[in-house]
Image (cartoon, rainbow over all chains, first blue to last red; front, side, top):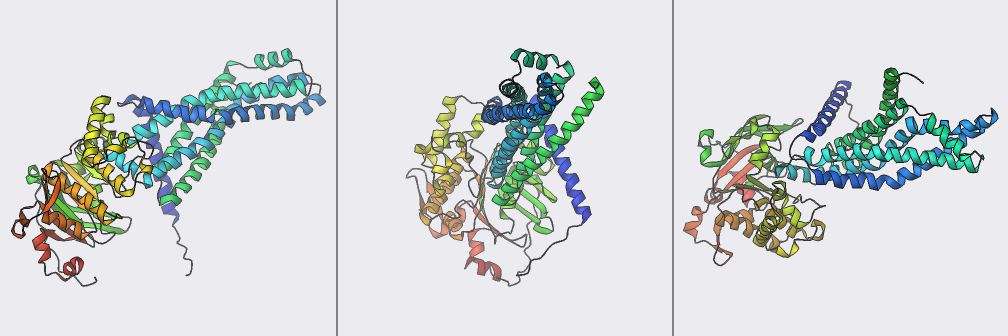
Length: 264
Length: 281
């Protein structure tokens, strides 16, 4: 049987894209608005916080530690050449707190949880469980999306703090044991370099990233079509879209905070 | 089955009589992308009656159930459920009417992460009833489908027939005024199918619930038209020939998105329409 390729007009593609953006925007707004409408599914939020937060802890610990150590290792040889090895604490601290901590944690949690949400909700769509929930008089956005959104935002905030701290510890291990830097010197310089703007930037990002991860994961899950193959497709799309969106949003948030609070 | 069918004169359905009708479809049409699934469909489900919906695969039977619950909006026409026009309602407003209607999905659609108890109790938990009250009512509902012993099991641990019975228990726990069954005996062995048919009949004759039942199995619907459930003996019995028309049971046949038959078992059996004769043969 000859393979028939169907040509889709650019107008149709544009229409589909606009419809997808509109649906995503609507879901995002509803997920926030539901926080102020009854019923509030507190038990579901708690359960999701456990799954997302505690469940992601091992990968966040490992990646945070590794990134901090790698950052120190890669920059140490250059700093040493110019006699600036003492600046290593500042470099790791600034890098981890403002950029790498939130970004790496966001990407790790996106890989783990956006895919999990998309596949779970996608499976519920193809087995008519979402229809059953609506038929039983329950709003799936309230019951499934809002708890995941709230839990991801809340837990990513704390996971990022843990990642930042472990990144600093990783940097310290390299700086102290491989390059012989004094502990006091490392921690003092790491601490003193940070100003309000850096900490604000580092803690504002996970809030946005958490929101992106949960809403993208839920959006792709709830728009799953086409059986188990569709679930696989949604899962992949959720990870790709959330990762790309995190990187794009990261750039603009950094630029915005610099514009508002001034450059270093 | 390609014999052309004479056009069926659809009954003119008036929305005004919705106090005696559980569900009214008035000139309802719906299409998915280019494919027309229902085309100007009208029918009425009187209160207390069970109507079996027939048609070949893809004829729009399951779509009718989803439209009745407001899970899908029609492209044209009006749908009145328990006196309320669901086509004019927003999703939030529909939740109230859905609480008065129970549905059994084709593949049961049980929540696989919840136990049987929590599946059946889903609506009650949403209403924040006490645990004692929930347990009491879940037990009653599961006793009705004879699955009281499965309370702590997960859906994956049940057979297909048991899942279907749990879905019935979930649908009836709030004693809804209308029940919608989507192929309740599809893919089941004859013995289990018979058990399910008996449960649906029990719901019709004991609780007097109105119901729409999508099915491919004519024999199930004919069993329901020729039998009644006896509450005392807790089993169904066959009716003498003359009494068959007294059973609140009707048949609706769809073809190419249109209603080609809407009537009782006797009218169906004596129809001269070649397509219908071939369908029921």
